[in-house]
Length: 378
Image (cartoon, rainbow, N blue to C red):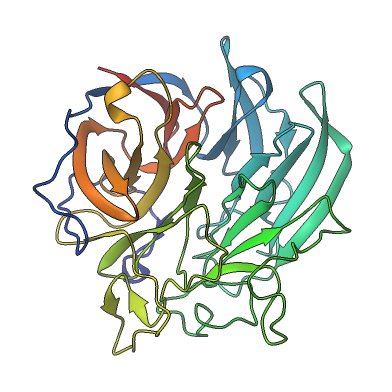
């Protein structure tokens, strides 16, 4: 996400920009899916600065609004807030209510937000008959943020039933504290915890750094700058991360479902496949599966989902993503960890800040200005 300061390539004043030229060191640009998917955007509702969404009980889609409200989208439209923490969060810089998630049984609901002091906070609520139980609220995890940008904040449950949490490198520009490569901080990391296994949570025994006394046990992977949005492929379990670049390259990282974690995605020694400010590529660097430069008008990748719905057969199995400054929906065909096809889906959703996947695996895309679209077959 970008609450743009042009120097750090992020948001402060929100302005709409247009198209994007893509390049990659990994994709054959001439390769394309056998059948070009034809999609259309159907506006289904208007929210207030939506930042995240998740499938909810009963075929609903729950939508987080940046100021601190959560609303439910169903067949009747977007309802009144079912949760309101606006008095507890701040929206300076890139902060606010940044992530929401249900566990697989829809018995617990999790929110990720920055509190009034700017501290990243993960809270849990019990859910009964599809309704949040406010009196069950508890804090699962907190992380102090030194700056108001690059806070990350996305959360989701993986196929393994554990909660994954994305935190940026802490902010400013260029990772001044070197958090991306440090294993003694949760900043610049993707975390994996078991919120039900302990108080406030447990660390899965097979996390990659559990036996390293110099590393944080919660870390699943590292070397991330601002992993604004990430997701798991509902078909394969593979992990995909849209990691926002500093000034030249936007990247999408990929890890197979069989991964045991521990991937080093390179920041801040690397920006994509390129040494950053004279950095040295780590020996264990896992390069992005895809990257694109800023020779066009793209400035901030917005990670999406591998499409597993039924409405658009030609799109099945392709990773759909966008860019906050460009707004064009694009797709990648990934086979065995390699991009074998790229496509421009021919639709633009404005300042794309997030995607959501409904319970039926159909996709929704959010414009920070408020528009919520469903991705349909043209």
